[in-house]
Amino acid sequence: MRKVRKNSYTASLTAESFLYDETRILAGLLSDGSDVETISKRNLAENLISCKRPGALKRLNLILADRLSEMTDDILEPLLNNDINNSRITLLYIICKTDKLVRDFILDVYSDKIITRADRITRIDLEKYFEKVCESEPKMLKTSDATKAKIKSVLARLLTSGGILEKINNDEFRIVRPVISEFTKQSIQHDGGDEFLKALGVTL
Image 1: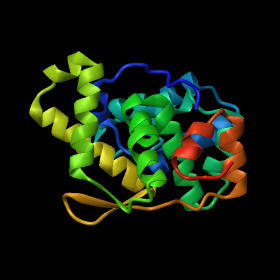
Image 2: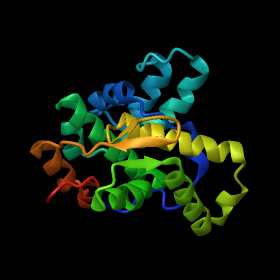
Image 3: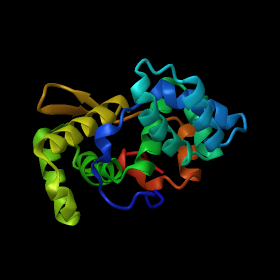
């Protein structure tokens, strides 16, 4: 995978949501030829994503604009014109391009579980990963315990929504090895996502 645009760990993940339907709505406009700035302004003015909480629209719009900025024609195709499972995997790949915490968890922790044929990821795995994050990014140590807990919760929820984890209970998640179509695989490869695919156990 190409180097993630945000090359440092931040607590911004606490504001993240999978936003599958919302991302596809705006990505459809991008596919039709509109640019990111125009789409973002229109979404703020018209609430294209039907956000039910007016106060949250601006925050969600920033997240979505960030994702749109990372979408190439190669990625738009499987996101918009694919079955839901492959479309969600494509969105997870896009999120990896915008957030280093998600990206590195998949490339380091999830990938290792796939290689060792482990069947689950636990809260302990999340704790160890976050300890490693704090070692490499000292400013994360200053993050409150509540924020750290929220980051871990959001990370697990994103991976579950993306279809590569399945919640067993509050402490364990079953690893789901995704079935990725040849169309999706080639699209992500063309975008430079070989590392992402390998981390999911896809043979290239």
